[in-house]
Image (cartoon, rainbow, N blue to C red; front, side, top):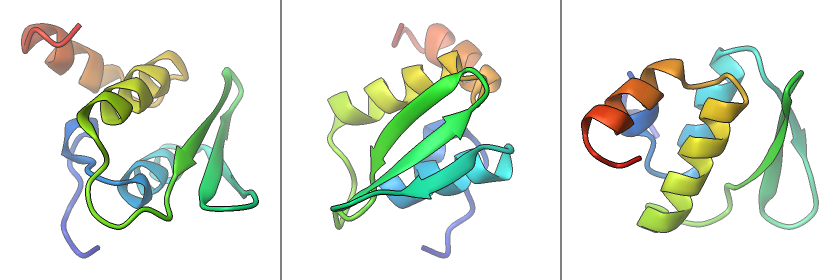
Length: 86
């Protein structure tokens, strides 16, 4: 994908989420199937990255909330709370 990801809210698919995490210092581990494990000192999260097209809204919100808990999306928390998502 060639578009710029400026915030966690701009992530549309699994590849966007893994790129976002890697730019913020997370380690990535490819696992079997179509998932990548995003690892930080606070924990880990499996992200599906083999799916073509945007992820469903519920899955995107789950990944965003988990990334915030892992310390990868502090700005996203304020934007989600302000937008009434949380």
